[in-house]
Amino acid sequence: MGHSLGGSVLAAAVSRLRPERAVYVDTPFGPARDRLDADAFAAELEEARAARTAEHLRRERPWWSEQDIAVEVEAATLFDIATTVSLHSRRVGGPDNTPPLVAPSLLVRADPSRYVSQEAAEGLRARGFAVRSVAGAGHSVWYGRHEDFLAALDGWL
Image 1 (cartoon, rainbow, N blue to C red):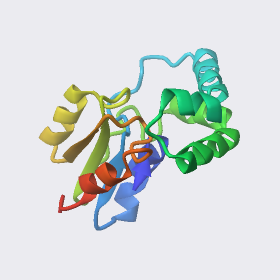
Image 2: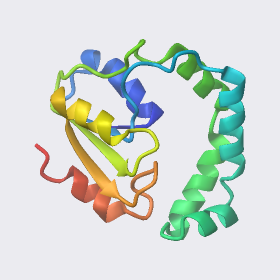
Image 3: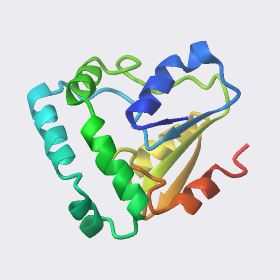
Image 4: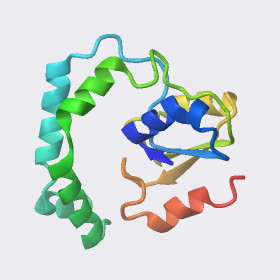
């Protein structure tokens, strides 16, 4: 199972790992952006990281638990912007990071998702992926929607 950039890393390794199944959580697949402006992307990530305060998250995501908030605040302090920019510049998995179907594969997306559009979800279905959505979830799909996230995993195989 991989979430977001972790899903891209899983996609790049899935052919070698040969898992029994693969789960990608709100992971954008497809062709890379034309040309990534690394400085602008780093600034965007820095702004997002700075907004990851407990006060901001309580206000913007009232459905999150205090534990979700605490974990996200701590994760923000550990988030490595330079590595993320570097990986996106090189596009983990190549120009099109959609993984091959070497195992049954599920994409769980937020609904609506900033990273996986409905059109992209349909394209993945056409390629053989199972796709499930968690209504009202954000990019970290399980925060505040844990039961719905687990329900999206249930019975897909």
